[in-house]
Image (cartoon, rainbow, N blue to C red; front, side, top):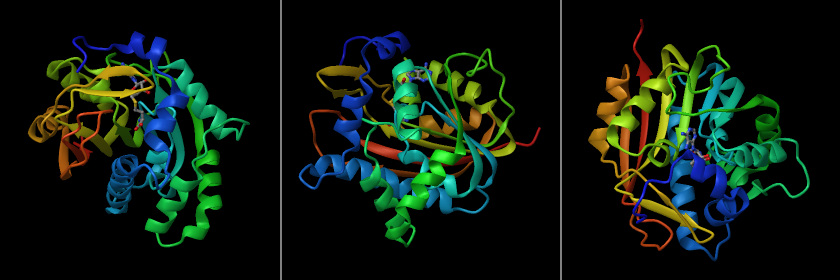
Length: 262
Ligand code: SAH
């Protein structure tokens, strides 16, 4: 594990979106571990967005990185999506895909997988277009700031989703707890939070770069979500048994919570 916390500026300087995508989001049959981590998370997102009540006008994706897999199940339930991330090159990489530009990452195998979960693999092109149409803005954010999207002030959304971001962005549990309060302000009272977080992990690596990760336990995440003004309505930890060098992940927590009415 890295001896020091890799902060937002380290992401800005060192996070290579294409290398990240290749390492964690390629779906080739020869890379078994990669498939397990990704497909497990896709199934969790499918399950969570199939729960009742997760629908509405707007969805905000916090710490989107260069990825869209977290929007594939979600996009069926919301009219508009706003994606937020700290790092310029990650937002640019995402926009490249949204505009279908040359050299953009190929998400087709992942989109097909999710369509299959939803019952019709043939709908992949339609879903891909849906995501491209629904993402209206890609903006800078910092989850450690009281107004994460500042100076922009976004109208509160019906739902926020955040995958694998806070545990990388927060150096300790108090910072994690305050980040949840910060991003909680982006969602309407009675709106939802959908979270995918790794448990017991201290680092992840790709392209010979190592990023620190806040070592979290299930009860710590749940308590932080509740302290941020939410009621946890679904929480499921899945052990992650694949042993790999690229990360020391012990499990993945999938959580849905509802913000208290004011
Ligand atoms: N959601 C994507 C990306 C996760 S990688 C996925 O599921 O794969 C972690 C992301 O957190 C990176 O894109 C990084 O730019 C972002 N990040 C790091 N520090 C942040 C901060 N302080 N505020 C917002 N995003 C941050």
